[in-house]
Length: 151
Image (cartoon, rainbow, N blue to C red; front, side, top):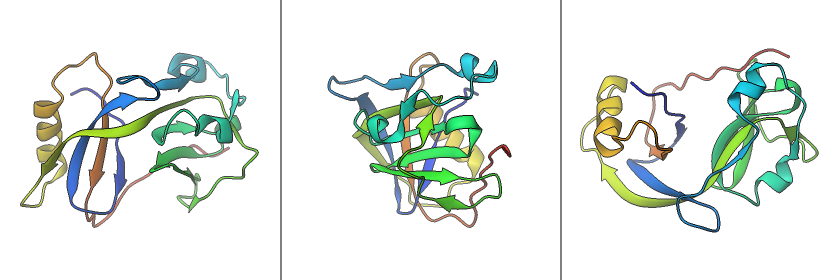
């Protein structure tokens, strides 16, 4: 199963998006995951500037100070303690991937879906393993597990 970064919010449908900033099917990425994994934790772009490239994405903050979630144009910082807060405006990011989310299709589920069923649905609607997909899942969740490394 390919790894897909998903962002969860509250509502009822799953939307598949064509990634695009100015041009259709375009993502913007700050650095690469390999650079981050090699220890380059210093922020390279301001979070304020980042939001001019997209309204949906994931990443991290300067010195790995929490996980970044960009949802509907609003940025959130998830701390190592599991707290969710709005980040300070002067924060920077060493690694992030964002897109201007525009849904291409909507899949409405009539029944509850566990994680296995959700993975199967995603594999059906997004079958290419070497293409980026932005997937927004709206629903009611009994719990959401997040993680972030302590600084």
